[in-house]
Amino acid sequence: MSESSPSIVILGGGFGGLHTALRLSQFPWAENTRPNIVLVDQNSQFLFSPLLYELVTDELDAWEIAPPFSELLANTAVQFKQDTVSAIDVPGQQVTLSSGETLSYDRLVLALGGETPLDVVPGAAEYALPFRTLADAQRLKDKLRLLEASGKDVIRVAVVGAGPSGVELTCKLADRLGDRGRIRLIDRNDRVLKQSTKFNQTAAQKALDQRGVWVDLDTSIEQINETDLVMVYKDQKDTIPVDLVLWTVGNAIAQPIQDLPVSHAADGRIRVDTMLQVSEHPTLFALGDLAEGLDANQQVVPTTAQSALQQADNVAWNVWASLSDRPLLPFRYMPLGEMLTLGVDSAALSGLGLTLDGSFAYLARRLVYLYRMPTLEHQIKVGLNWVMKPLLEALQPKP
Image (cartoon, rainbow, N blue to C red):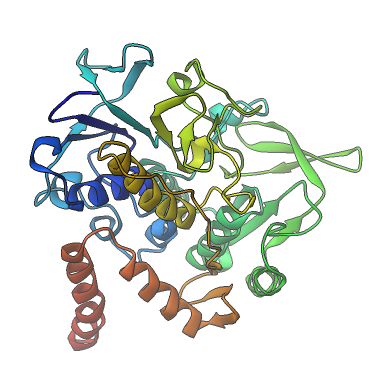
């Protein structure tokens, strides 16, 4: 470790990486140990991913959920680099970026998240769209506009995966397409939202039924073609016509992370201890979708935004403590419940003894997520827009 001005490099600017950087910039560093903090992400904008679905129905604008890192980090000591990771040299404590730049570090935080794998079934990479990034949302909207302008009486959409992402996306698509939409939600499990609470499962199934969504459970996908897909249910194959396939299942780990000479889980994630340190490498910390390990209470930590936010606070403290001769703290995950959008102006939430669905849940979800926006400045900008937008729309003369 350097005697002065240590370097902290954070790879990935999602919930885990960005909030780790913001928290580190707020700690009371001693003058001779104030670090150089560098945040690296391949995109120029942070993405508030739980609100990505609202772009499909134009309930929100992209700037509200994807502010630029330059704006979020403007009043901090964090340096942002838009780049991708080419290689990580653990023994040499260096990161090589695709641009050719090399970053030396005293502490490295791995928060690159995951990717949606499209190599699971034949044809998925060619004909299915993932829904995980701002670019994914834009591609989907472009495709929907083409289909809506095509003159087709019926637009056939298949959404693969009945987890939270699949259910939320399906409800938004159903509300956007209305009577023209013929939407199928396909999952290999025996019910939607298998890992969710009973309340949210019931609310989701009700929302799907109300929108006329056909739900295929205990069903897997064998192949996706340009205009159809092949499903398998109880060893029976069925080929159905489709105009659009959305793939929402799976989590793939970036190759530079898989190549690291550290302990990995079977799915490629990095094993961490209760301090969120990489085993046998005290200069490495990992969190979010690419980290695997139980917390201090021996709980499995889910790969969600709320988990990454909680882990970010813990990693920031432990990085600071490790550079300030203070004790590290074990991570304890606190489940805060689950919130789902179930169409336009509707949602469901359950957790901490509270269950709610419908328009009140939609409002509560919006307020919670407004509070979770990464900086106060962005909270104020978005909050004012949410207040003023309906007022301005109400004042506009009717055609």
